Image (tube, rainbow, N blue to C red; front, side, top):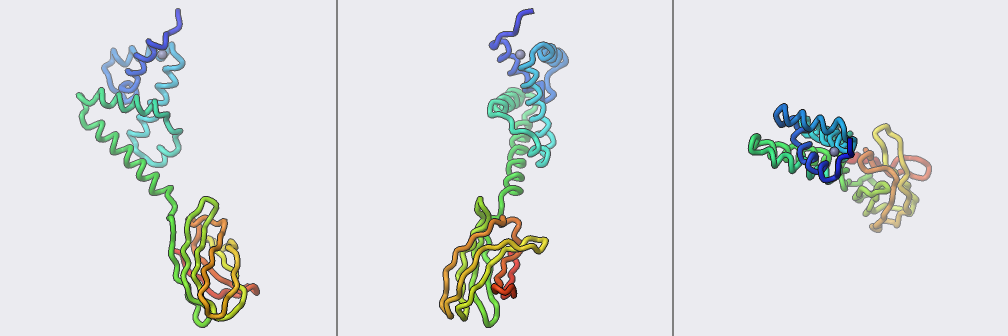
Length: 211
Ligand SMILES: [Zn+2]
């Protein structure tokens, strides 16, 4: 038995898409399966297509995310297969596109961290201002505009949902003058429940929830 040429495999691969989507009559499916039985490369391709077809069928975000990302070539073949097949199932292309869009949107919404949060800071008699928290690849940047009534040192921290605190640096007050302070914490903004300011002695001056 001679090895299958690349050209022959290319022809087979155009038939793999409909096969992977469960289409084609018994003879067509049997023909594809008989080629797959003797061709390792096409079998790998078929498995990859089958997984994509499964992910599309379920359009389940977790399942889709758990699967390895198919190569662009695989997507091209799926798309070609769907186009080829739409005479029989006209709605499939739209349904597949909607499923892909739903998965993409779901993943986007789930993975996209909140990019920034604004928090008002007010501790009666001690401090007023606001803080803009921005999500960064290294953690969270905190741009504060703050007025304190003395020249004391203040420590700033971010708090996790379990109450543990991650330092974000410190600043010194300037006797009733407004300060622009940019601080940084390694805590991810998506894990940040609150921002707080303490004295060096550890007394909490202020704690504000980050929505
Ligand atoms: Zn082959």
